[in-house]
Length: 192
Image (cartoon, rainbow, N blue to C red; front, side):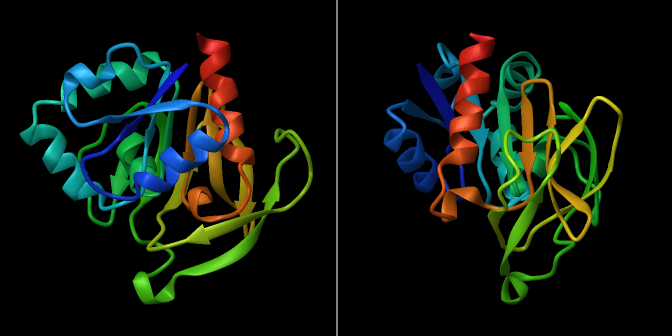
C-alpha cells in the first residue's frame, strides 16, 4: 500500500518515518502525477497559506481537491486548515472536504506551543489519554453531525473524523505513539 504526504512545505519527514515504522511505503506529493496510485494522503503541519499558494502555483490545487474528496485524507494543523469548509482569522480558501470550521493560530503563537494529554471520546478505539503537541495550533470552531470528535482538549475537539477524513489540530508525528498513524493506515486499507 502506498500513502502520499503533501511535500510542498512543512513537517514531511516525521510522517514518512512513522509510516516506515508501520511497514507502509510513502510517496512525497509535489505535483499532480504523484497522486496516481495512492490509497490516501497526509496533509502535514506547516503554514497553510504558504501551502495553498504553492498548490495553486504548481497547478496541483484542483487535482488534490478531487483526490481528498474521493480518498482517505488526514490533515494535521495546517493540513486541517486546508481541509476545513470554513477558515477564519484570517479567512482563506481551502479544499473544503471536511465539514468543520477552523480558526487559525487560536492556541497562540510559536512561543506559546505546549504539550498536553488529550481526552479520547467514546468514538475512539480505547480510552487511554494520548499526548498532543500543539504548535501555533488552530481550533476547530464548529462541526456538523456526521463529524465525530475522536480527541478533545479542555472540552474542545482537537481530532475529528468524517468518514475516511481525519483532521488533527496537534502533531502526533512528534510524539512517541504510532497509534494515530496506524488508525489512518487502517482507514486507507478499508477504503481500498
